[in-house]
Image: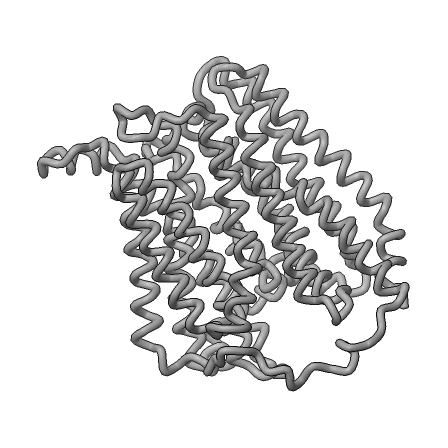
Length: 463
């Protein structure tokens, strides 16, 4: 989750110090953007937690009755477009709207899309997904730009500010499945609907509507505290561009671009596995996992909250780890390899879990362990990836290369949907083959990247 902002996860060591004087002296606009983004992430991850479940649910239960392959493919296309549209969204803000106007417009479009999903109609369903993708493309790249514009280039509060902002993202992502998932799936809420004369099969749409309410809350905070935001012109000024940005292209530039391109290939594989949690693993949780622990029953979608919860816990740990290791920490490509290794182990862990489903539903602790390994992989790969893109890209094409990063992420999301289409309930052998093949492929990729690491390092250091 949240790979748009995982660059900031590398600095999350300051999350433990948000009550310090340094943290409380941030510009007032940070609080505005914190809550705006928190509610936007609530909206996005709340809808995402129930999307595939809604698509495959039978019509009698209020769902669309799609088969797994169709639902997984649509999920992959939707998440791909969310990331892909960030590129034109950023360009539109740079050249015409300005970041603040783009954020407001994006939030309005997202809210409209969420409420469209609350209407039980297939045309409204497709329109809603389209609007959310467009709105997210406008909002996501530009709200982080606004956070950055709160601080001067050398402001010592900058990293701490992004860390606090990153906390808002994950708080929203933790809360979203708990609220939206409960409204969409909970038997308790369905009984409440019956007692009030409503159709319990419509509970899905209450979940989607709550995601829309979350986005409206974010917009409300933004508008009430509008004066705290940095000024955002229609176009970025060309003043401040360095001479280096107009320097001639060199062979070293070519080699650095090739190095980044190699890493992009492995990035696609990583996100293809990571996004299984929103597609095939969401179905796995719904159909093959006991959604109870210690006598407490909960909706399957609640398991989606584990990922941001783990990020909140572990991001500061990893930040401190890399700082303490100093020059002894592994280089960027080897951190990528560690990320692939971790998520490869997560997929392999699903092999015995899948085998056990032949005897009945399994403990939710299996998925808890899988998601923990996923997040460890994310914290090894995603922050490093964004850092390397900004560090190694020739200044003439930094924006293009960042767009390419999001393009690689979008391809990974689409591939995740394709892979999820092979999920079949009631066939443990098929699931073992699905996750075993994915895990083995990731482990091979991790080994290959570890071997390529020194070569990529030499290409990255080319003059």
